[in-house]
Image (cartoon, rainbow, N blue to C red; front, side, top):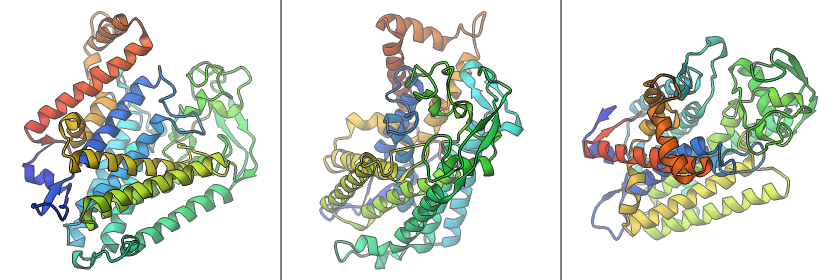
Length: 463
């Protein structure tokens, strides 16, 4: 937790003002609001997705609301990289900052998603080191941040040379970013389509599975397939991470092949294929390589903020690029060339979500930074300025776990459960609608107020 002066917080998201402005620098309120929206979406889809599966992660191919959260985070990280490193001229200082922040993200990722806090709202804690989950949301952000930040530090040009002289000069100015991005894409596609995936076996660890303790075999012996059991993304993770260190409850369990309740959770089909009971890492190694592209596109949009000095040029660039990326993504998906798939982090998925992120940033920029319509979006700005706090307390359920630790007579009799039942479920006479209302008002709005109060005292949790 950090106590900061206002000028300290401003420096991270201040850009050169437009040519028609009398102030040399202005704060980018739209970036805080975009980050706050993304955190709010994460809380919404995580806590209401069980009752509303259409906003939860797609079981395999497809792109639901929840599938935009991770790429939005990575995109915002990219924009922030461009803004935060523009004034750090000493490369040694910049490298130290990158290393420290990367280690902090990895630490919190392992702590929050490694398994120690299994389900804190059910008072279950602790993890067997032999089965700790090695990858997760913050770990993926750490990897993308480290790679793109190092690219930014070692390839950026001095401010005096960062002048735009043509329509494509912004791309020429940061040519190394695109060259390295192309290399990342080639490595990802070559591995995804070129690696041979052999048959594999695993022991079922889920105690609720009818096959608990059994060793099942998954038949593959293929190359270049993107189906759940036989893709190269899962194969790389099984070889490098090991099955015990992967996510044990993948979204594919909600697919039609695995449960008759699809897209809801439900009991496995009696004829469910053997891979339905297996682990799969949605934030794994190869898919994280592809995720670097989301951050590179974000850092490009940050360069647009820095290098283009008028509103219309910035908005035109973001809008054209965003629409273009969405068209490419949709074309790849509906031509059956490359489907949308968050678990594999496919190219079509990168294009769709990055394009959407560019358009959302442009929309917030128009409303907040150009039209100065700030008040309706202040709750999102507050959340965005304390995103790490809200992520830990709400999205990772640490606060709910703490409150539920104080119960009456039995663990189910807690303040949180009482509020859910009597104020939301009973009032709306529907668990489905009540859950949605509880998440919106009892979690998102509650934490927006908390973040607003912390903002008044200039208290921020930053990495």
